[in-house]
Image (cartoon, helix red, strand yellow):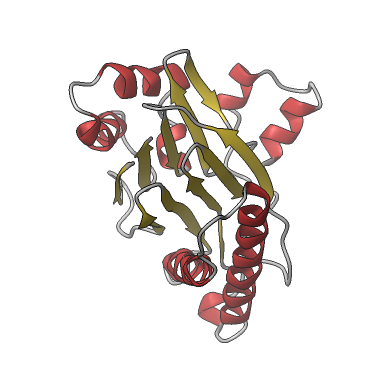
Length: 243
């Protein structure tokens, strides 16, 4: 398994409020996490980096051989609970931190299975020889309207409220994350990203870069380059695993 990732403030933001991490526990067990902070310049980066640190520390602490997908899901839920508690408590300490929070998408990869947890609108994608699949569902006003049939996917892309999320880490005393369990095959690519990428690139465009790029190791840089060429109005973070 190979891992690559990067984060960039984009073209318009002075500060990068995204955070990410990738850990390899063994040859066939890895963790990826992407968080997109919110709450203003003084606190968005605090929320995302704190969530990443607490979450990864807990997942690392719980590592042992023979993990099942079900046990991995329990570990991710527990790590999310601790990360949420840490960000929420930090937000109570200063007016500068009031209202801060962060999205969180993470994947614990167990050889041929990815166990994914998601809060907010950062995303997980799977790229295979058959195409691209969005694995997570955004917790956003626009996605809620799409699910209710009030908007089409095409209308949702340009809706003025597309960045308003309905669930975040650290804004309430507790939060629930959605769990997804996905089988993986050799040469599949799992990609996590903040909305700074998914807002400016269509799924099929990402697929082209992942599937037809000269080197997988350059894929994250190519995706970032395209995002910046299109204005990159938000921070951009990409983490990718090649199984």
